[in-house]
Image (cartoon, rainbow, N blue to C red; front, side, top):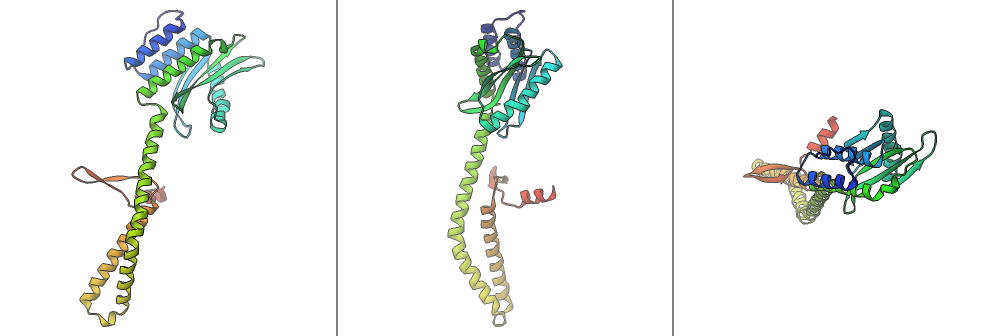
Length: 261
């Protein structure tokens, strides 16, 4: 993405951002250049792009700043204000002005696909000039950056979609487990009860029959254990079965790993 003019106008910034995205150029480099050029055009002392996961944990950060001081101030605004407002008050966008010894203006605009917000562009401007005069340009910039990331499969929507898929898979397995418990455990209980009653009368049974009854009892208990494990599942794990086929892993591997941490 090559923006060599000393003072690129806003339409050229947006055009080159769109072209760079269409060419499949590196997303972080596209973002860095776009922030640099937008900061120069609007007069920002610092600008940043953040991507986060569903827990609002930052996964990607791209920052432009004129000085370490302005960078620090911008990062503090994100951490102390914008991040908390997004998480606690569902903040989407804002334009703010601050007074004091060093008055400044700041903004946060979302990176989103549909109703899913997976990141933000924020900026800091020191002095009397107001950012609001360029709000349409900044909003277009954020929209193009969001389009680049979602088109390349790096937007938060993919995270949420995968989460939804996992939830649906788990829900289907749990529904099956309920059916299995209802349809299998009822006759299984009858089998176990009768086998155990017979084993109580072991004095009347020959050794071969006792051993066969014990095998039936052990097998029935294993079936009961499988249905209980299905009901306890909290996430879907699969293992290879045969010929490329996979099966649901109902082992206690996850519980064992948790206990050893």
